[in-house]
Amino acid sequence: FWEELVDLKASLKTFCQRNGLLTLSVISVVAGCLLGFMMRNMQLSEQAKVYFSFPGELLMRMLKMLILPLITSSLMSGLSAMDSRACGRMGVITITYYLWTTFIAVIVGIILVLIIHPGAGAVKEGDRANNGPVMTSADALLDLIRNMFPSNLIEATFQQYRTQLIPSIKPLSSSRIAGLAPSFVYIVPDEKNPKLGTAVYLELTPAPEVIYRSTPGNSREMNVLGIVLFSATIGLLLGKMGERGMPMVNVCQCINECVMKIISAAVWYFPFGIVFLVAGKILEMQDPTMIGKKLGLYAVTVVSGLLIHGLILLPTFYFLITKKNPIPYVRGLLQALVIALATSSSSATLPITMKCLLENNRVDRRIARFVLPVGATINMDGTALYEAVAAIFIAQVNQYDLDFGQIITISITATAASIGAAGIPQAGLVTMVIVLTSVGLPADDITLIVAVDWALDRFRTMINVLGDALAAGIIAHICRKDFMPSTEKGSRLNLHFLLCMIVKRDAEVYKLGLGIE
Image 1 (cartoon, rainbow, N blue to C red):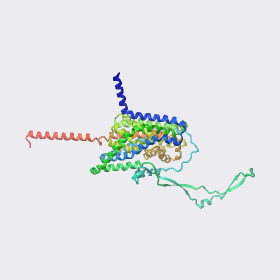
Image 2 (cartoon, rainbow, N blue to C red):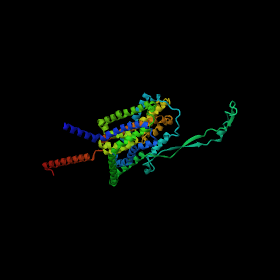
Image 3 (cartoon, one colour):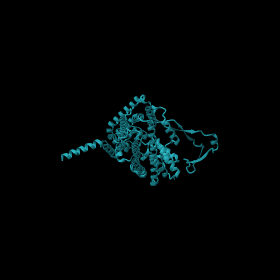
Image 4 (cartoon, one colour):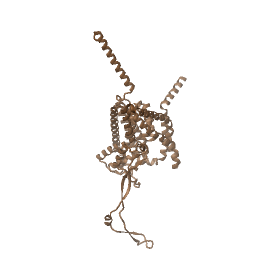
């Protein structure tokens, strides 16, 4: 009995050491949901909600604090240790794989939304307020290119370029006014004689035409795309500099190790912060019953597409390419997936994803340092699927029949727009305008899906993070010969040297036996 008790205690200790943090994180998500729904009945004030969500806010700030040093140090130190030819090959394979999986996610979403047809049961409200001007597709594309080349690198660490539309009144020409009737007659009630009324003459001029002009602006979000491009360039150049660049490489490696140690210590705060982060979001949401009636079928369509893409297609790609079982690999990512579910930010989850890949799945450090930051910037499978489904859903609500060409336009535009979506919460709503305007749908109808977006954003972030991590495993398998560990390379070189020495010695012995000098 005592031996069984000791064995059970040892098993529990081993389980807690391996999966204790993951178990606490899952419990925290469940506890946060329960606490949030219980506290909705308390009718807390807005200020009380802010105070209640403060521990969750600290969690988000802690994660965002680590994004900049992690991206810069990992890319610079990782790419500096790579051969330029191998790095170029890995970059081409990575970008191609990301674009391919994103396009497949869009196709899955389009097929599901056309089959389920969630817009048939939704009702469009007629009294929605106009949200003002929206960004055009051309402005969004130009902003994406501008952010790839930031004019100020320090400014890129806390804000990015974004075009703003400023309204102005177009002056009316005199000929346009002269062509109108000078006055109109209106009959208004007369207090003295209400039966007859009083004639009132009003001179009317046409309403002024409001035009919008584009002006430079900024949004308070880190320009991750520009930082990734700059850091990757510096890393490649440091590798070509050789010994002269080693001091900078050593600094980047030290910073990267320090960041990983900070992450290892900070993860124990995550279960506590997740409880209040999830509960605070539930307190801010609208009536769940009303949302379920209006957008329930739409939410089911999006979640179904995400599950098919994340649990079936992506693991299948991993299995077909690597010939390995994806289940143990995904099991090592569960901690990052739980953090993605709680934070709804792939960039904020990046430190935890890096930790899971290096410690649990033993992915090559050099490959993980390149693939993950790039993936957190441009690989948004879940966001692309969501944008395609939302665009067709809005078309169905407006009873707008899309032809095959417009569906192809949505698929291509959703793929391109997801690349420019920053890894921040609800960034898909911003890029959603590009998809809607590409097929002539009203951009103001984004408000139809805002109520449920906070929940769907968490699920699509999980798929984004899962896609990045599986891509790292696939790229590590494809490029395993290019990025062979230095110890293995050394052993192969030593073996080759020994074989050469043996052959040379045998040749000398053979010559001596024949009497040849």
